[in-house]
Length: 258
Length: 336
Image (cartoon, chains in turn yellow, green):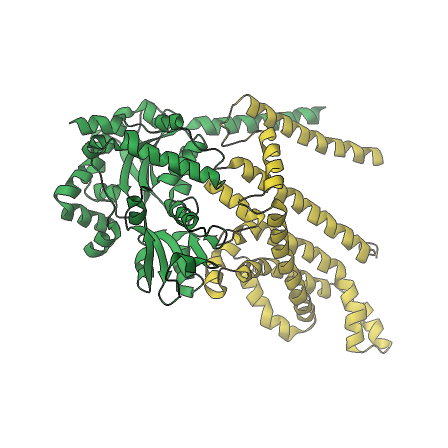
């Protein structure tokens, strides 16, 4: 079993190596113009330059931090609001009827479709960016909470109640822990959703952020900078998801074992 | 091992697709359609389009004419790279970007030398009376545009570069932000200037800069592959544009009316949007050595400034500029 796993890892690594070699070949043979596909060396040297001198007078780490701050504050806001609302909606029919249809309505709309409206409402500052990401992150958490609550085994609730637990105790000691694995899945999906929206959020009236850097570089046709930005976003995305997985394993260690 | 072969096969086919993409649109021997990227402004292309000059010319050659609207030269440049358009009108700063990133394209025409159709507007009652009052303000402008360049030049002149925060916005977003009161200053162009001037006024216009020998202009680029295989069509198109420039000087009413109709504007609106921009005829360009000397010098200054601001990687050399400017078409037209 373990050997097989190793084998598959090898294939993943090999795929990446092949991709790199092909990239290197295509660019060194000048099959495509540099503006469409800059060479790996160029991308690396651009990355080093950006780390040293920054982009547009702002250090690269600052661009990165501001993007992360926007993303994380939106996700935290979404967790604070969507988890309670989702849990209550899953438990109380009236609340569910009130909110569910609204969220189902907003959920499938691509965030860019209402972004211009958001800018008119709350302006061009940080608020509109965070709100956009927040809206993208809200629905996955909310829906996961509902399904988490509805999945709770009725026997558990009944046993707790027959032992004299108050509704409050049932909620915090039975329902909430049982829903936790689903909540975590929701949060991971939410981070992914917000993350895919981050470039869009930084498209209008931003002056920093990795997403903004990619867009600004595209205006000056600097494909090397665009590559650096996209690679940074890709690596960060994977790292974020792995990080959440680790936390999930720590907090809901019982998940999948019952 | 078989899997590795499969992976290799997939990668190789991807590679083929990619090279296919870059070669697909090059040099079709027979042209069935020319695609012209336009700005939504009352300019010579708008007039020539409305008066059917372009369509009549290309129809005779059994070629369809297709127009594609761009908000600024930024996206027009991308379309030139991907080979989706053959001609594109843009600000000269986008031309410098194209040159510096070695896009296969040539400058063939100067549509208009900018005047008061571009400028820095400040809100009435915002307390901004002089350039120094701009310190600490948010100023919006579409990045990489001629407006951006003119704004940067102005800010540098008054030592304000580090003292203001610049916001990169499309022209429509600038109007929205202006109406909301998010910004009280913006360097932009018509038609967005008109609504802003209702409760704002100019601090400086590109006409002032032109008088200080900082010329900005709208230019037309042609895709390199198209120019090499069909020089006669390039010349034909410029002939039609030159006709509007000549008529602008003899019968301006006809041209402005046409340009206004094309953009759904009233005559007076179009007239004020054209403002003091100059439409040089091919003959005037030749007589003033505009394309061969004056304008190349301006492109050089622009390139150096943009490289200093690190917006482009390297400033185009004088040689690169003279290769980029294909002045032969204008010269042929101007000699007649």
